[in-house]
Amino acid sequence: MLRKWFFAASLVVCCTVAIGCDNRDHESARRKRPTNFILISMDTVRADHLGCYGYGRDTTPAIDAYAKRGIIFENCTSSSSWTVPAHHTIFTSMEPATHGCVYYPSPGRLSPKFDTMAKIFSRRGFKTAAFTGGGYVGKQMGFDVGFDHFESLDIRFEYNMEATMKWLDENSDEPFFLFMHGFNAHRPYVPPPPYKHLFAGDYKGNYEIKEFGPGRPRPDGEDLDYVISQYDGEIAFIDAMMGDFFRFLQQKNVLSDTLVILTSDHGDEFYEHGRCDHIHNLFDELTAVPWIMFGPGIPARRETQHVGTIDILPTVLSIFGLKESIPFQGVDLSALVYGDQSTREQTVFGFTGKGGEPKHLSSVRTNRWKLVTDIPSGGPNPKCARCNQKEAEGSVVGLFDLQADPGEQQDVGKEHPKVVRELWGILLERLKECGTLAQSTETALPSTPEYLEALRTLGYVDGD
Image (cartoon, rainbow, N blue to C red):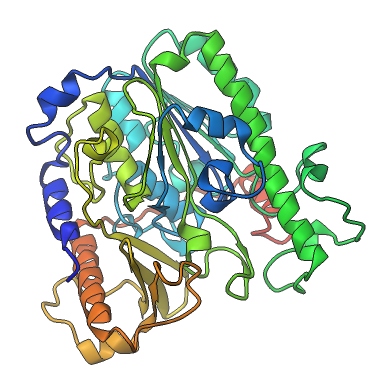
């Protein structure tokens, strides 16, 4: 029988957000708290392509070294397989089905009724700044709300780094929250030398990397290996920049007082399930992302417990000792971070879809199982008190036993109908909760030339 930690967690968190709402307050108070917070989102970086997550290539020597100072969540799941819903969930600790910014390519703008990470830190007296890749992480989608300073000079980290360090030079004398984001590892993969050649070996082909994408001929053999080498080269370039950035923080005597989180919104596919790119499914190559956290008081260890990026916000607030009586759907994992909590099974959900389609994908994942379902747009009526099981089972895309089949190649739903029914029931309860907490999205801001250019560069908009 699967334990329903999800039910208890979601109800408690939605009451008061449960930031330290038990007897752990006195214990955590004795730990050194950070002064500043830096959240770094490496867009489109899948966990299994980082060295500290066991990848065979040495893509992330700098990140690996800093990861050893803190905690590595080995089993972290994103809430979506594309940028907008995944990032809004990180910032609000609300499911995509709750904040509503979920359907590609026009997810809408986040409702101002939601509290966000930036809003919370700002009203607590922190200086707040964001330097992002723009586009789907730009003002049009509402990501600027709550930040004192919001800037998007280019889609890539390197073109925003100088402005980021300048802001820190001018503002790091007071507590701050800094958000950094870059699309380097997003298609098209164009790492600069020497990273372009770092993992390419003796490739002598002439495959054009700009041709890699959905709806285009599939590269095979050496050509596909070359594509992956360029993706890995982008990750290695990000790593080099992060190493330089962390050394800059050390030289300014800022790093020792700063909580740092490196994560991602989603990964990318290389035909593990017959397709490339992202958005269109919820397999682990798209939803298994890194969550690395180091800073004052954070123990150096690896954590195998299954967690979600939806848990980042309540966990961070607890680490800072900031209590907020607002609803979150994520779980405060601070006790797990400090090793005070025994292993319990956590349920993490995923959502994705394209606008105009009659059905969209949802998933529910535990340590062992993942159920993927194809549900009607908008999900079930939150006022509906019953589930039509026959209809529900007809909507199952697949059940995967992640212990026996971590690559999610074999649907075992017919062999485990009881697990299907139980997970489906858990998902429906979550969807009903999402309907209760939901707010209407707003119309996105008018598109600017900069916004459209960012989407063109990332392959979302035609270049004509």
